[in-house]
Length: 219
Image (cartoon, rainbow, N blue to C red; front, side, top):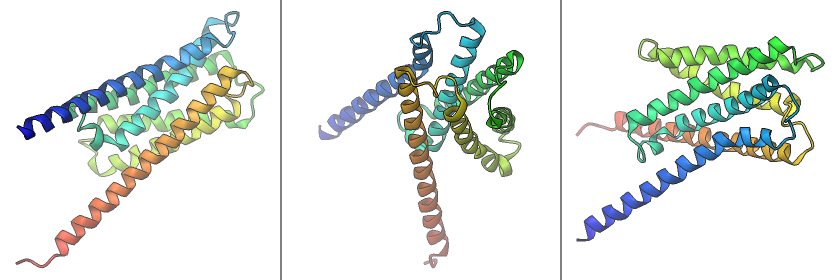
């Protein structure tokens, strides 16, 4: 009788974690449009408002892509691996498309005039992101370089964060909503860094154990 009870408790905890994670994701996705809507931007051009939301959403989805990739083994215990992998790829692809749309609007409307040279980070990061998305979609044909190329996502994420902090419209204002956004994005960076560190540590431990097994005397 104890084993079924323990299994029921474990299933209950997994369901609770799933609900918590799904709720957190929904809140994260809704945060950019909500923050932009309360920023007093009603009189601004709709295209400019769309550009701001797209940029913030792109950063959010790339963050989710990084964390779900770094902690995939843990997430596989909560969700079906195949479905979760599709979600992971979808976040990366959608984040790329939103970043592409954001960049296209910025360039088309020439909003970067008057900015300092760091605006170049955006197009460069977008180009690198395109490469990582292509390699991720073709990972079975490019198994040897997939992991190395995919790691560029971490560099892109960091570069875009620095760009947003320095010249981002919604993160450089002194208003309350901008402070909230900046705080949330800093938390994203910290969480991404911790997730990446956990992934590296797990890889090192796994590699060490494999070497010990391979070097152990037979018999």
